[in-house]
Length: 391
Image (cartoon, rainbow, N blue to C red; front, side, top):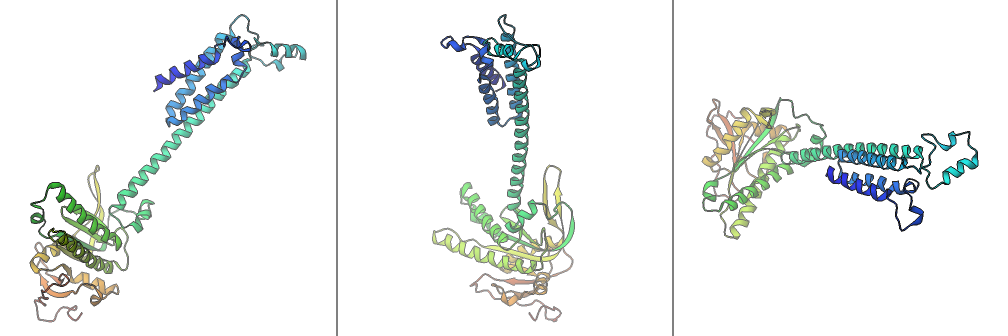
């Protein structure tokens, strides 16, 4: 591109200074430096700003300056050229007004002062426009980075806090411990559901599931922590904690079941197999922060609360629940002013359950699918020790 620009400016300069033999008034080469020919070269240099390259803009300015200078000196050194030298006619007090006017009107007259002004104008304009292009590119790049960050945040966080995160209102770089709600939702029998599907159909099914679940999480102000195959992990209380996190956690789980129910009915009507999921929810203290290496970081939550929620999701397969919630999650819901009997799904106490990898049993509350004939198994203990039995 630089070589092409060199050729173009050189040809343009030659066209501007070579006399036109068909026009008597322009038969002298000195005339080219007294007319508005320079403005064509000036406009051409300004036009290179459309390349959005500051380097190319400076290159054009330098080439134009050199080309115009060479042309000027070639014509200036012709024997018939008339010039007062490097001074202005006004700086020659020895000449009378008529003598100055006669020199100025001479068709062979060339002004070094005018030439110097033209070069200064070329260089100054090129430098200013090059700086403007450089600054504009930086602003555009910064905007692109901001938009990219905004788009990445929108994949994981609720839209109502994405703008605040992008603006840096909330710090997600520092690690801290917080009470959060954790939700795991997983497709039951996904392998059997997709074993006869073409790869693209299986991916389409998975993307449809992920979209429905993530949209539901965002609708209740939650955060999609990660996608793990046919499983989605979501959190409530990250990156900012709210007083109704537990309420939104349960509302999201119930809405997910309703969404899957509608989706399954739609699939059955067109002859496809229904979809069923298991949801595990727990509320407790977890560590929030970025994990991973320098090249790949992920904002996530870790700790016992996450493990319990994952185990509860697996428990739904054994118990036949649509949603399995811990006693801590139920307690957090009540502390936030929520009511179990106001939820769309009927949660009943199933009893303490020993989860794999955990020494202390977890009190489990389960909700079956809407319209299910299965009945609550009831508490597995009868000592009346649970403070939540009466709810």
